[in-house]
Every structure is written in structure tokens, then in C-alpha cells.
Image (cartoon, rainbow, N blue to C red; front, top):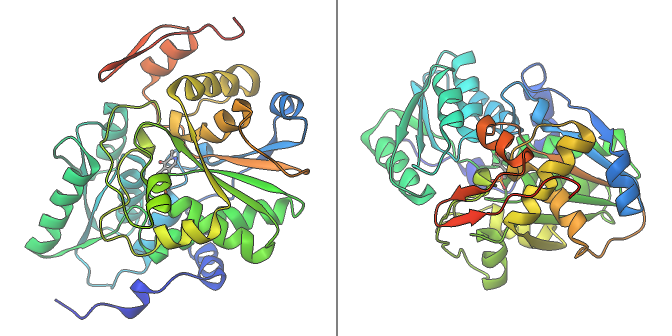
Length: 344
Ligand SMILES: *Cc1c(COP(=O)(O)O)cnc(C)c1O
């Protein structure tokens, strides 16, 4: 084993985000920031959508993965990570571009559509246990066995800096943005975006949003330490999992850089998926519409001025997506989510 790299434990800065922007150019796209006329009229302010669902692997996680993989030493034989699906897809994509072996550890809760997308990129998929913690255990075991470098889905300065490039792009396109609604799970996305946005404009309001079924970061910020959550099925499957018992970076960054964290219900996520599809014609996964769900909940106390949310990904199971749009009931673990016809 080599000695730990001190840079790997330091908090990233805006300079790291700008550096990541240079590194990921050509691999991850500067996605469009488009107005939503429907949401703008419902919210009484301009609402913009940052379309990370349009990234090459269908989610923003490509940014952090490409940045982190590019930092690996030239003799690194391969990478391993745990993932709820999209990080694994980004790592698989970035590893293939460098000719590296990639092993992606996931729990049984990860939908088949996400597993298939990763296999299609040539990575090895290991399904282990029924939670992100179980998947993490498998990744830790593989690292200990030797040879593979681990890339955390969120608690890694290069991953955070990579996701932060979204913040730079949004503020470059619209320096007048007053509020950012950011989907929140392990917090790499929220930490990176809030770091970039608050450094550029300290007055901007940053709100992290997650589902109420297993809101690890929300609970951990309140407790002041990493709180384990029981993982259950959710429409927002990509927001599942804890923040890691040894969290080093994203908990302090989210605590310091987010003005607020808000929870949304499965019904609100379902309704937001329908609004985005029927009004804005966008196919997006549950985890990516929680900002819209929070906006439509009426529970946000917002400053005047334009607001943007990140549509983080599109990698949903299409049969489930079609059922939700058709207003059908959906079984999710021990819960039945009642269907609702859009506009009814
Ligand atoms: C990973 C992910 C998130 C949350 O990102 P974190 O960095 O874990 O907070 C949100 N949306 C989608 C689609 C994701 O894949």
C-alpha cells in the first residue's frame, strides 16, 4: 500500500472545480439550462431546468467520475465503486475510455435498467446485499484484496469538484439566479454545486432535497454526525443509501453550504415526474425531479428572483415510467403507491 495522498482528504475549492471543468471537457457536456414555462407560471417566478438527463450516460455522475478517474496513476490496473446505478455507469464509462477494468458493486435495490446500462459499458457488476452499505462492504473487500482503486460515489474531492462544474455552468449562463434546488443523497452533487455557486455569489440560496423514505444527509446534518438509515424502495432509487459512517467531506460541506434541506413524499415525486413529462416533455427518473416536487409542495420559502433545479438523470425503468404516466398503481417494496392520472 502507498501512503495516503494528503490532497485526497482536503476539502475541494473553486480552483479544483475550475480544474475539473478543464479535465472533463469533451467527455461530459455543458448541458442546456432551459426555461420551464409551466413551472414558471405555477411558481410565480422564472424556473429553469439544468438538463443533466442529457449527459452521455444519462446522468450528471459522469462529471465526477471522469474527473476522479483522470487523477488515477498511470499504472492503476482498475477501479471499483459502490453505486445506486448512475455513479457506476459514469465510472464504467470513464474507465473504458482509459482502458481500465471497472467493478461496480450494487445492492439488490438497484433497478435492472441501471445494471444493464453498466454491463453494456463493459464493466463487471456485483450485486451484493440489500443496501448501499452492503454494496460498500463488497467494494471495501475488493480494495483490500488488492489491485483496484476505489472511487467513492460522493465522499471524494475529485468527485465533488466534478459535480461542482454544474454550478459554474449554471451561473455562467444565468448570473442572476437567486435559488438553486439540488437533489441530495450522499451530497457530492449538492456540496460541489453549492461550493461553486456560493463562492461566485455568496447571496445565492441553496436548498438540498431528498425523499422522506431514508433521508440520510438531512438526518445527519441535524444530528451533527453520520446517521444510518434503513433503505427502502423509493421512486427516487438513485437517492438511496447512507452517507457513510466515516464521512469526511460531504457532511461538513452540505452542513455549511446548504441553507436548508427539504423532504418530499413518494406521491410528490410521482406528481413531479408527471409534470415534467406532460408539460416539459422530459423523461426523468424519480431522484431527479425532487426539486420540482419541493417547488410544487408549497413548503419552500423562496427569495425573489429566478430559480433553477438540476434534472439529474433519466435512467429509469421505462415500464415503471410508463405505468406512472398512465396513472397505474405501483408496488414498491412494502408500499403501494396509488396511481393518479395527470390533471385529474
Ligand atoms: C447520485 C444521484 C443524485 C444525488 O447525488 P449525491 O451526490 O449522491 O447527493 C441525484 N440524482 C441522481 C439521478 C443521481 O444519480
